[in-house]
Length: 260
Image (cartoon, rainbow, N blue to C red):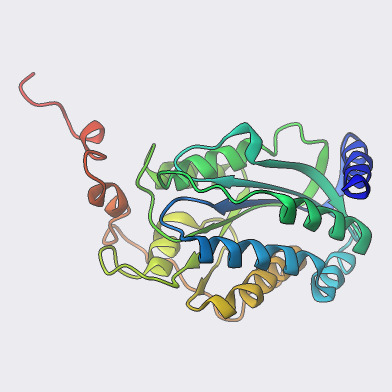
């Protein structure tokens, strides 16, 4: 524990270097809503920890123009608590990657109500402000197992983030899919992801988690085009408010008031 704490202090000090050039500024936004059961949450956590320690991920980091990335992590549900963050850190090699992975691994798993993808995107976008880094790319990597059903609608949040040059990629967790809103990877493709080269990867089985997360991080760090990309459907046909419509009372504040 003391070793991890010492590493965190050293890494946090490194993060204060103003304008440090990195290949990617990467925000990991991880779903801990109560629609995730404890098995999904544990497998998701282990997937991120293992991916961060994997040699293929480290090779992708070292293969960049600068050979280093800036990374931060937070957990979200209907709201985001101050304790849900791991601060920005530099990863350029195995020591720093292992230290960051240890911080993720040490977090208690605490599930909360609601699924506010819009809130996660808006919060993730704000983390780039004055973070002390100058990245060639800025990416929000968002995982989730259901549609937005809390807070503001998701598409305006996505559009505001992409207008700032931020790319949003998705991991659609479909281990226990719901027929109520259709295929979650379609929802993510139409309503959540955005920006040049944006993609979503689906996870159908617990054993696929580690591979999917590692693959996604490698693609994001390397900037390579994903070979199996889900394309966003053009046009207004897809209902990006399906999550709000399925949550009792959620639509009331978006509908015009009657009788006035």
